[in-house]
Image (cartoon, rainbow, N blue to C red):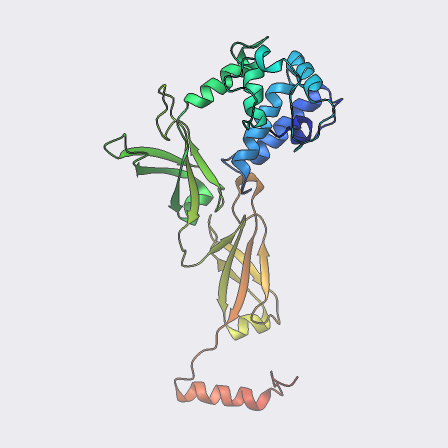
Amino acid sequence: MKYKDYYDVLGVGRDASPEEIKRAYKRLARKYHPDVSKEPDAEERFKDVGEAYDVLRDKDKRATYDNLGRGYHAGDEFSPPPGWESAFNFSGGFSGEKFDFGDFLNGLFGEGAPGGGPFGDQFRQSAARGGDEHAKIVITLEEAFRGGERSLSVKSDTRRARARTLKVKIPAGVQEGQQIRLAGQGQAGARGRAGDLYLGVEFAPHPVFRATGRDVHMNLPVTPWEAALGATVKVPTLGRSVDLKIPAGSQTGRKLRLKGKGLGGSNAGDQYVTLQIMTPPADSESAKRLYKSMSDEFDFNPRGD
């Protein structure tokens, strides 16, 4: 089986203090929490971080772990010392069977092992827990901006004959690709403890805006005279309309920024406005004469280069 280096998992040295271990755990638990992380292996990393912290925060477990792993590195094939099989009550033994390191520590700190207790209880509870399930929820950008609540009809597994209606709280500032966790709404467990339901957030198409992470983008039509002379125009945002100053001499494609008008709550992204100059139609004789006079007046060739 493979040796798992818990110090490496938490990113701390082997001489790290309890306070350093605790700080590292909090930082990584926030980073890889399945509710907020976009990392593809977030759920597995989150479990590894929790497992490492459970051992290293306890003085006795840490000492036993340090003695056990002396001389090994993460990923090394691990062979326990003689006599550990009987001393730590492994049901399958080590002869010819493959165990992962979590299985080994289950026997090491679980029921029937010296100093057994909370660490073993955690593994037994995990085994009895139902599986997690994953689904998606499609929300509007306005819901992502303001937050809100949705009623969602789900059927978690075949043991539930009818679909259930759940209240889903949408946090303000949620981004596409993040997950909303509904605790206890996954598959039923063997001892009644259900797993969790994770809802992957997707944004419905919007007629005006598109989102990239925390930032919001839109195209803004402007007249030739607004672009040439400059103007102040009303621009919609996900919150309320604001005044935007268009600099004189602007061209199609120019991008202007509205700071803090994107998604993200107190740590909001920005809104980017891309100008599109729209030409009035020459649908009357007077309009045609005006365009002809502009042609005569301006010595301008946009294809000159």
